[in-house]
Amino acid sequence: IIGGVTKMRPFRISMGLDPDTEESGESFASALGIIVSSFPLGCMFGSLSAGWLAESLGRKITVLVGSIIFTIAGVFQAAAIHLWMMIVGRVGAGLGVGIMSMVVPLFNAEIAPKQLRGRLVSLQQLSITFGIMVSFLVNVAVENVEIGWRISLGLQSVFSIVLVVGMLMLPESPRWLVKNGEIGKALSVLQRLRGGADGQNANVAQEELDEIVDNIEDEKSIGEGTWKEIFCAPDITKRVIIGCGCQFFQQFSGINVVMYYSPIIFEHVGVPPLTSTAVVGVINFLSTFIAIYVIDKIGRKFLMMVGAVGMTVSLFVAGALIYAVDVSTNTTVGILVVVLVCLYVNSFAYSWGPCVWVVASEIYPLRLRGKAVSVTTFTNWVGVFIVAQITPLLLQANVLNVQGMFVLMGGFCAAAFFFVLFLVPETKGISLEAIGTLFQRSNWLEITQPGRYLREEFAAYLCCRTPKRHPTHHKSAKPEQATAAV
Image (cartoon, rainbow, N blue to C red; front, top):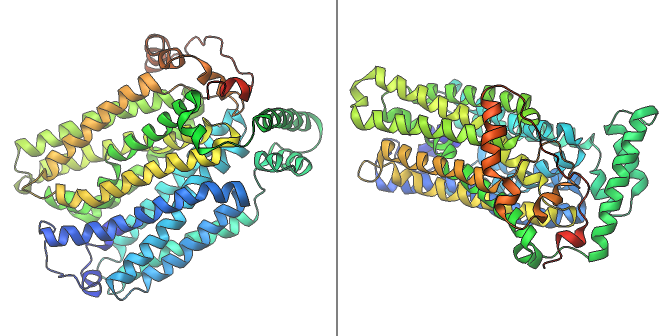
């Protein structure tokens, strides 16, 4: 929402900025970078604190805490009359979002049945893209209204209030309840989530509870997970590298260059900035439905690899067009660049948008999950902060400009393809308790088997065929085995 707000003349006047300053000016670029990056700065601190909150207070209460902080901060931004108030409000909003971005996918993964886990966690990304789309459309609607920027920023709090009310109706994570000795409550929650306390559903809930209890008892025999274990235990370190690496490439693929600074990009190529940004928001939202439909059918890995290819091609072609043609005088090419940006966003929205959060929420053992997910989420927000801070400077004509930025983003997307191929295993259809068996293998190539995956599964999915699945060990990993090398 901030990308469109910073284009509004009344906002610039209220914040003490020169309303006629062009984005190419270095002083304005620095001020814009501070305004935008203050939000992910708050997110960084929020994501780090969320691990402790989620383990101490529970997943549900932690979401409520983050929602309330964000609601207050949204009101503060809408009421801001000085630049420092805006920055404080954005840091506060970031604190709330940082907490929720860590705990919400964790909560979703822990309450979902394994066959629907990817789809349910992806619904979080759908909600995010819906919010982005609404914010872009609202910016277009209030662009010429004197208090339009206050309406845009204040609307954030309305959605967070809805989240607070909704969370009050939801149960606590059954895995957190078992970990804290409330097995009876955990069974009631599982029966409620799996469709009742009678018949087959009751058996499903009881079997899932037994698996959770067995796994947690094994983990307790080792002791509480420590920060040292996250960074030193070989099998856990592999998971942290996967989680942090996915978050790194999600951000440096450049999605927030587009989401935060698309008005500047589209103005550069000679098309209406806010209207084109709204189109991107709609594409982002609609494309996320693809992931919801297929993520538990064809898996996280395939979507991330195909998405990386789509993003790479779109960005390289868009960058080459801007290099080759003076887009400021050629409307047709400018529109084509917008189409390519939409294709890039489409590729991101069905792949790296939802899949990264799914993978990061499901690969860690329960006793380390809160700490480990907070580390991977922190990596995400560090990436957002860096991108938000440096992009206005890189977009200047004497640095990278738009075309150079697209090529740089495309390079990261190409690297992301190989990162997933060689380091990220497929986790669809495996229970959270059983995923640990994947990481007991001695090296990365045994875990991911990239050659076999390309020949059999990737090629089959490209040809719309069901691949032949090799036997996979789906029994719960004993924590003693998983951490024996610590």
